[in-house]
Image (cartoon, rainbow, N blue to C red; front, side, top):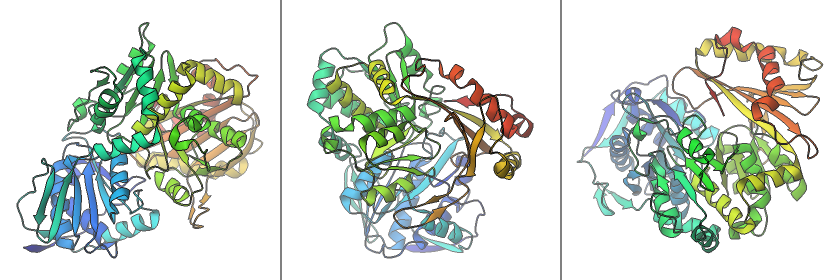
Length: 541
């Protein structure tokens, strides 16, 4: 029986860069999740009888919301839903399943790298038929609908068994519970030389992968079963609703255990981690941390060594806050470099148009045209493929890269949990200074350009403005200020700090020392402590 349930709008359901993210207790309010899901469906056209993909990262509330989605999809006229066994689908695996099944779209239930548990975070994101996040025109329509919704449709029916692979009926709709790993792992085998990686591992090459008790427990299937790494290579492989009380963000703060292992005297040759929903990555060689910006550049420069990219790249895309390291690779390869706003949806248009092949963000997201999401395991496998071919250590590869292209010393300082009015005031004050900043002298040097980044998409001429304040200096250094859209409480100010030295410069400095003057200049220009009350960042990556 299809029920039409009366409801009232919630005024806080505006999707951010990656869907709607709120505390679990917010999603647990009566009608809250249902309102948002119905608003998604109401904003779409032509889905009747079509296929919907549903899955998530296994965090707290994942299973309950999946049952709501299934019953609402049946009541709204979808013909088929593909759901990952146990409700599990990593974000890149969901993207691949949408694409490979010809689905109309998908709902990915995740708050990505945010913590999970009854007092933590949950999220819902709609992906379109190309497998990528909904573009702004769709998310804007969803938000408008959340403010006007008066009812939602849901099937009155028992919960569906999502723990056994197979097919069942829910009203007039077919529900298929599918293996969340095999199709994705098979795709990886088409892109990378598994035989070469397997031989390298068999030759006493040691690696360590931390799944962070999150969705990429499927790394066991790939690294241990298919590539022959010893049992135990993958740590924290069981997805847990609260990620084992850990913060599933693969950075140097939350993956400190892996970092310490890689800096020890008896460190493995290669270490990596992924995040809550499997779309981010952390790369650390033996005694050698690789920044996400440098990783993007190295992967782009060496991608041709993997079978899936042997013909070369069509272009490279990076988010605006990501360092310029990839720009120098694109210049040497003679291919375009696209600088986009933050958000993977901007890369999707370039990938669909065949204008770019590899994309990356400084926030540890890297991917290619094999799906329309960033992909943590993909990045790790491409690194392993490069290591297998070049037969050098990570440290040697980085040294060679900097000797060829120069080095972009780079860091991101996050000031978390700022009162939103204070964060907005800081950004407003910065924007008010933009016109007067060129010519401004600091201990770093003179400002030569300042702007509020705006982007015109080359594929559809759509525009995005107010994407972050950029300040460029006469020595090639750069500072970027922007507010993050991925948190659930308060505001996070992200400050991106960059200093470039050419191949003949000092390439082995400690990052903090290299960036000292950049950091001091950022504080002076933005009056960070005065606005936030914080004399140091919460997290440095």
